[in-house]
Image 1: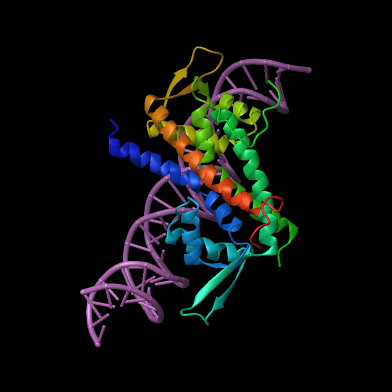
Image 2: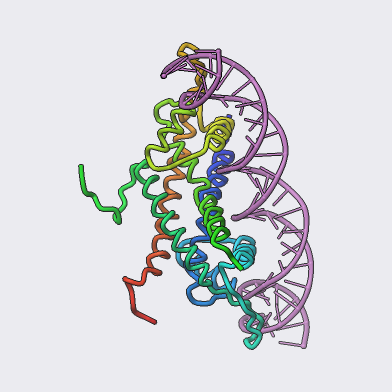
Length: 124
Length: 124
DNA sequence: TGACAATACTATACGGCATACAGTATAATG
DNA sequence: CATTATACTGTATGCCGTATAGTATTGTCA
């Protein structure tokens, strides 16, 4: 038997998996202008994507390590901040990922029978 | 330095992460009518979502273990097939996940739209 | 002024899942 | 009768998000 709590837990676990990778896409898309971890965190939250500190900071480091981001310290302000910005390579990758994203959402929305306002309703 | 091959590899890795969890959603959505692994595999492919055997079979087992699917053997046909179908619990979970999916895509599409150079030129 | 919350970052351990890889076995096709 | 497509099982691996803990500064309010 499955209790209500276990049901919720299941949903949360699957939702987490659902968000996986998508957060990366979101982050890359928001780093056209340089931002530091904390500000990015707030910005994503403002736009309706709540992300944990423990997700964002490792993610930023990973992305930089992979060459998709560039960063530098700003020690002149009130306190040291590491500003991240998308790199040229990152832009290329982002473009590819956007394409993939469109494909994926297209396929899935058909399966889920979701009416997307962006897709043209030609045919049928 | 990043070679072309490494670039592609990066994109593929991130795409994989992007698809993560989404495949689950796709599978659940396609199991209103009972299907066996192999037919599901083909069906997903037909709808534009290529998935590997090594992804689908473990996924089906996991989902059944979690109570989201029900399955039974059909040994009467030409060869034994395990037919999977979504369970009542699975339906509930699917509904929730759909809501999440809509939220996530909504937030992300806004973020990605901001990036499109053709749209807003305000602000600088 | 001194305590506490918010800011801002780093580091490590853990668990879940997709994939790779390997294996088993039957049916259809030529 | 051998090869391919079908159809499933099982294990090992790697990556990532999260939890957790830790460090240290800034701002605020009493």
